[in-house]
Image 1 (tube, rainbow, N blue to C red):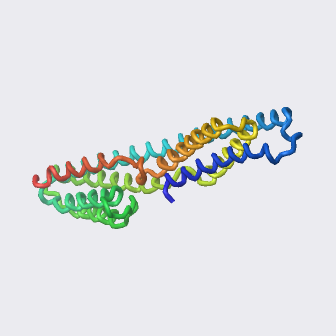
Image 2 (cartoon, rainbow, N blue to C red):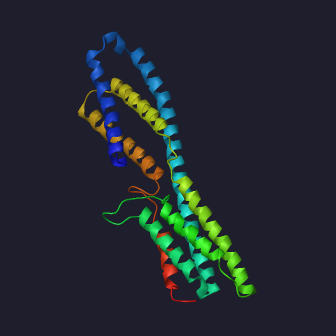
Image 3 (cartoon, helix red, strand yellow):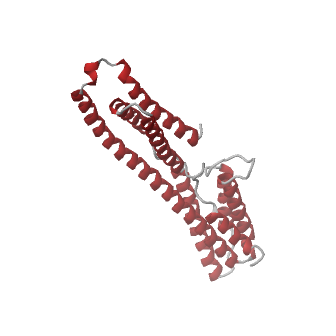
Length: 258
């Protein structure tokens, strides 16, 4: 189920709660609708509203933090890719094989995370992309330096390759959702209960129904933002591919050099 469909279902449930509250006036006995009773319901709904607002804010902050962390890790991954390629370029023609593997790794990662039309999303944890990066590291280890400068460049390349592999594993670990579904389910149940109480206390007219609809859509939009930011590489709010694509351009710019 897509995040958009989920958010629309949430909006529908919240709106239905308000409508149910409006209809309760017809079925509840009159003494259940006394002013004192409605005041108690209103106070209880106010307390739950404060809790729901706090949890909504916490979930949005958690999803935003996870998205920002993944974006920072992806930019660091792209920067390490460029640095490693430039080090190998400085090493000389002997490192051309490692550079070719590095470029293939970058191309594969781009295809996995940002597929073209008709292509399937694979994700950052594609084993084939990891194998290509591991083979590039092995090629760097097998280089035979001809002097102190190439020895130093090989050591730098090995360190940068290790950093690149570390960044990749960080991205894999951060790719999972940060918001627990059960927390979101409980929060939606609270919100539905709040809207039932709103309907119980509200006059029954078209303006109230319209307001319930608009507010329900706003709450569904908040859920949509949480789900979208929590899935960093998928959906409408997925992270930008520009850092890794720029890195690929840099790798291609020096493909013919030494």
